[in-house]
Structures are given as C-alpha cells and as structure tokens.
Amino acid sequence: MNTSEAAKLLGVSTSTIQRWVKQLDLPMERNERGHYHFNDKDIKVLQEIHEQLQSGTLIQEIVPVKEKKIPRKGIVNSTEKNETFEKLLEKVNKLEMGLHAKADSVASYQLLQHRREIEELQQQIKELTQLVETLQTEMNEMKRPPQIEKPLVLDNGKVKRKKKSFVSSLLGL
Image (tube, rainbow, N blue to C red):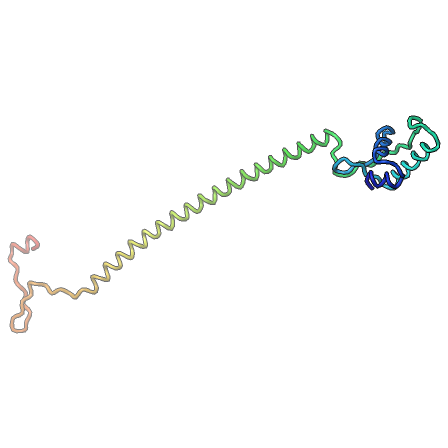
C-alpha cells in the first residue's frame, strides 16, 4: 500500500504519514523510486501512533516498536559487496580474454592447416596437368598414320632399299 492509500485509511494527510515516518525513524520499506510501501504490520504501527496522538500524547513522547526490517533481495548494502562484484567482474574479463586468445590460436592453426592442404592440392593439380599433356601428346602421335621411310624404292612390286655408301654408314647418315 502506498502513502496516499495509508493516509486515506487512517484519515490523515500524506505529509502527516511521511512526517511520522521521518520523526519517529520508522523502518518502512521503500520501492525502487524511493516511495514508501506499507504492509499490514506497518499500518498497525501507524494506527497505534495515530491513537496515541489522538489521546493527547506528544509525538516526541511516542516510542514506536522498532523492528528490524529484512532487507529486500537484490539491494547492494555495502561496499564490500561492490568489491566482491568488481573482483568477480575482473575474473570474468580475464576468462573472456583467455577464451578469445585460445579461439584466435585455434583459428590460426586451422588456417595454417588449410593453407598446407591447398598447397598440396595445387602441387597435385600441376602434376596431373603435366601427365594429361604427356598423354595427349602420346595419343596424337598414335593417331598419325605411320610414315614410310623414303629410302625405300619400289621396283616391280619388290621393295628395294637404297644402298648406303660406306662413308654415310660410318657417319650415321
């Protein structure tokens, strides 16, 4: 319940409720925006204060029952928690940096491996290209019709070879 709702319930103004909380140092819970939030126990305490004031008791003489409120979860209460948080954040940052460094080294290693594989494939392509050219040359030679040697002379259907001279046979001509 907010301050205006509590004020309507007790029949007083919102500033009166706020003054009671401040002057009597009541441990009231606040929401995210800093506005008071009253639960049923808080309303009972405020009703007792209102009754005492109605009976003529001065506000300085009122001694409310102060009970410790359980702090809401999620609120950072001390700088010690901030230091712990900072240390934790620092550890997380170190782990992230280590993770990035490891990822970079793995990526570099993989790039080197791929580069080696590509170089090996390029070498194999060169060898295969040379082999294909050699095979094409041999096929072209096989497709050519066989050439008849010129020194052969046909005489009456008989093949006669032209006799080489002694000098040309010595020289290999």
